[in-house]
Length: 284
Image 1 (tube, helix red, strand yellow):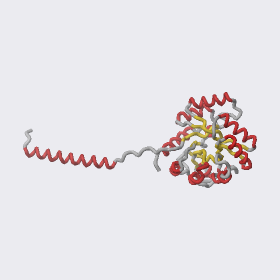
Image 2 (cartoon, one colour; image 1 turned 180 degrees about the horizontal axis):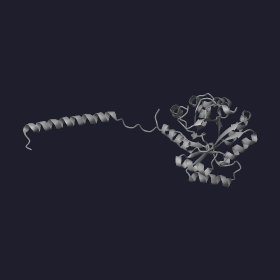
Image 3 (spheres, one colour; image 1 turned 30 degrees about the vertical axis):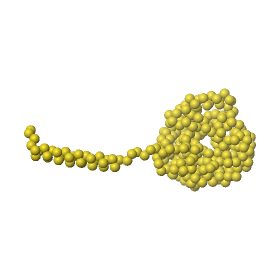
Image 4 (spheres, helix red, strand yellow; image 1 turned 90 degrees about the vertical axis):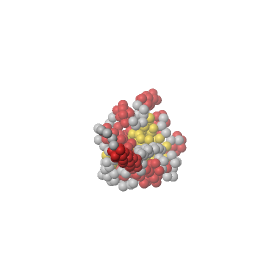
C-alpha cells in the first residue's frame, strides 16, 4: 500500500502518542513498585531447649534440628546423664557436631541441696559449657553465688509461671538475684512469665542485664489456664518481643521450648521455627 504524506504524519503522531503512553506507564510502575526492604539484622541466635524432646532420643533430636537448620541445643540430662564418663561426653559432642549442633548450656537442673549444686557445676564443667540453667531453692542462692565466683559460669534461673512456687516470673528472679554476683540472672521463659500475669516484653526491657537465656514459646492465655501452642497462634506479641531484643542488643540464645503434643511435636516445632525465623526477618 502506497504511503501518502498524510498517512505518514498520522502514523508518526500515533507512534509518538504510544511512546508517550509507554513512558508514562514505565514511570508509574517505577514509582509504584518500591524495592524490597533488606532483611533485618538480628543479634540473637535460635536454638532448642532440650526438654522439647523429652520423649525422644538424641538421634531424633539432632536429626530434627538439622532439618530445621537449628544449631544450638540446651542439653538435658536425659540426653547426657550427670554421671556420663569423659568418653561419653566426647561422643555426645561428636554426634552433635556431625549434625551441625553445639550444646551451649545444660539444664534446667533442679537443685535442692548444696550437693546437687556441686554436682551441677561439676557436670557443666565436664560437659564444657559456661552456662547453667538452674532452679535452686531460695535459701541456696548464697551458695550458688559462691559457686559462680569459683567457676566463672553464668547461672540462669528458669522461671516457671504459676505452676510451682519457685521463681514464678521475671520480677521474682530479679528481686532474689539483683544483689548477687552479676553472673546470676535468668532464663526468661516468655510463656510462663505471661501465664503469671506479667508482660514478658516489658520484663525483658526491664531486666535485660540479667537475661542470659530465653525460652521461646507461645501460650493460649495470660493466666494459669494458658497452655502451649504453635508460635504466632497464642497471646505472645512476637513483633514487640523481636523489636525489644534488637533495642537492648540481646545476644543470648532464643531456644524454642515446644510443649504441645510432646509425643508428636514435629509439625508444631517446624511451624514455630518457621514463624520465628520469618518474623525475625521483618522490620518493626
